[in-house]
Image (tube, rainbow, N blue to C red):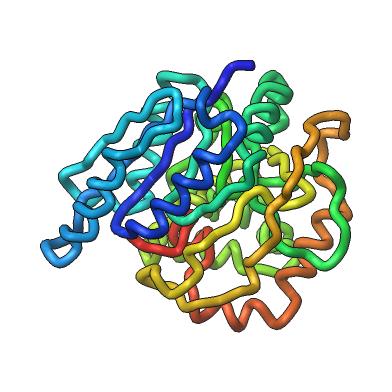
Length: 303
């Protein structure tokens, strides 16, 4: 099996970064994986100490096939950093697993990512593989597809990333012209369209809402596991724009998840369970006070 490099984006959270790395090291395929880390530069002198702390830790990392760290002098911000970093690495390797510094993984995460990339490599209907699953009320299948793309522990190929459209105005225009905004919002359950408008109007800086919209408009699907292989530990008030919340918390899978053997189309049951998750507990009103994954990228700390 051809192994994808793991690209990790970090900034100024030493504890979260350490937890992320420790979990990745515990993955079955860690020793066969190249780890490439992009360390963003500080916004100002007040953040330099934390950035330096993270970088000192990064220099101690082992347990992977190779470890390479790119320390940026300037502050790119998360959106620019991810777009530039993924583009650079995928041009070299042809495929990539993308992580951020607040994602703790199951030991089977890298196995699922790489097996998914291998199995669906030539199926152009599949744009990406994803590791996190919302804690829905109900039983999901072993694996399933949802239309669009996602952003908490994911993987793709060059053919997939080449479809990324950075122009938010163009994406909004296409959604409106094709009368797809309601469907894009999961039939009204979640305000993705408004987030895309905010991005297009420079009110938020998010690569992930554009990644999702790019895939959605092309009717591409993403593979998900039936039980989450990723836990976000950043929804703990450590991020710049986030309060502490617990409704994203899930139970990590303690077993390997088999890839393949399902029809490559959006799973209706999974779609309705995820839609129900968003409606539950009046989540939309809660989300007005936080920045969810798509609003600023994939984690909850703005760089």
